[in-house]
Length: 317
Image (cartoon, rainbow, N blue to C red; front, side, top):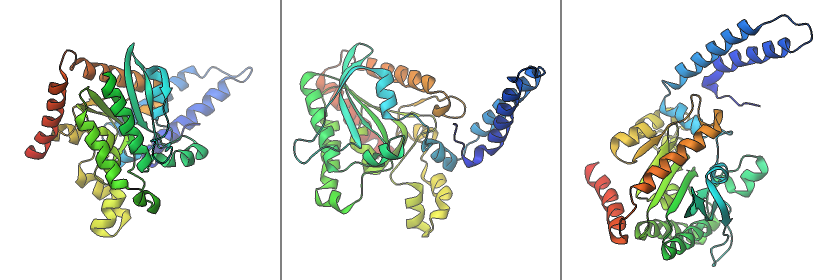
């Protein structure tokens, strides 16, 4: 069953009427209503296109968090062949908010790391809503160092509201683990590509997104803090999250203009959740193009380009 966001109410009403008409048309002896169905389909498609052509940053935030949006496990299953997951940080334990392993992307051996929120209540609890603890970032470091040793590109799929802020995470060195993971990204002598598929929140995202090429889906968001968190700090009112979202420049379009990301991956009208195969195909094409840019480059040049990219961000903004 399709889930609708608040601002999609006009489309929801039209599509509900459309389903009723289709059900009526399937009854034995029902009159032909194909013309009316076609008219409603066109009207619903037009309404959806008009809404998504003028989304506000807060509305994009809602789309990025849509419960039916494809998650890392979907991209991994659709884009990575022969995937072999690895678990544990070899220090404390396993953290299922960050998943990773090795496989083949279009025949090419790669290391894959991704943040998984979970699609059901049980899965969300198991994956801690995509908010990693220190052991998750130390697992990511372990994977990246292994990939570097064997000369394998690293693909990172970013989708988290932020690192887990619990007391136990702080006790186990959350800030240090994030810093080490960011350092591991910068030290890689192989190309790494990060793609923000939903939310890219704070250090929880940058820990695996410090990449040669940073991509974002059209309706994804990427920010130093959530709009709700920023509103709480600035105005002591989470109800002003929509104001914070606009002020922070968190959309893919804003971040491309500012030079924070390198390219935007298009989504179907209505968001990636309305056409999952198209979302996976678009992401695969963007990743393939990004990796091709580094073919034939040496380890030092790949590392220097990455470092220069982030130095330029600090100098230009």
